[in-house]
Length: 422
Image (cartoon, one colour):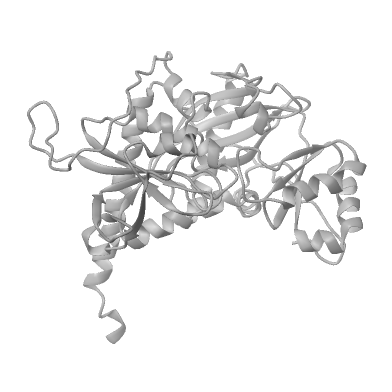
């Protein structure tokens, strides 16, 4: 944190990138949509004459963060593309007040803000069963979930909190672990680790709300001296560009900091890069793969919340029309970022190609990237040869794989539980 009014910006670490072979791309494929399917009994056999039981999957959406509405849109796309012949889909919504609700059409109820007809639920953390038991308010068992797909962007969902809950229940889930999620959510911690790993990021300073209130002049002086204008003020732990401001002049800095401070106690200010905005999707556990690189062409000052979800002025170009060596290097940087931040399952890595110098920077990572119709993560994988439905299936497989590996470690520990007596 900033101390003693002497504030220095963190500088990007220089490095020579190793040579890697990027993931191959293929022609874009059309994604086949499927309508919503109400959850069916786990005793129903899978079609095609097999006797295998369906897998109960809980899709959790909404949440208490400022990205609640975005979560609903992402969840709709995911639910529409889960194979209803293979999975029983249970829709679970979390209100802005933290109440958990379920029902066959819970997503529609959340969208229309008519949740009174839904059933209030709570979870039973029964670790030995490796299933998450969902009960109604009266204690009646609704279902036992085999795996959970959290679609909760931002705090209380993308930050390791719900992942920790699922770990305690010993149930499989899609996406990054507790540690990877927590690191990815906190832009400050992530940047410190990227610096250590030799991955270039834009220069930055950070501080807390109370520090700014007491040391405004020192912060403003530091920004002018170490970062310059334009710069970007951001809440440290939020996504979807909520609370972010582009500051062109010192006179506007305090207002921008106060805006960011509405959403988080920690604020980060980054040096503005005259760059093209690049994104790369990463998928996998122990041998992650990088998609083709895409470019976001913003419609306004920068890729803010309204540009993403409201006015529709932003455009995407897949693949990005950049030199091949730059594309391959950014893929390599995305994979290195993924590993450095202890990610598994999935993530979207965002960065810049500086127009002035041709240098590449990593900006941030999103461990539960958007899954809306305009979201880059599924679109990048679609172009790379993995259609939406197949992508969802692969994410579920990766979640089950990670869970299996974790339980191997737990069994090994139990077998040696008398180690302290030796």
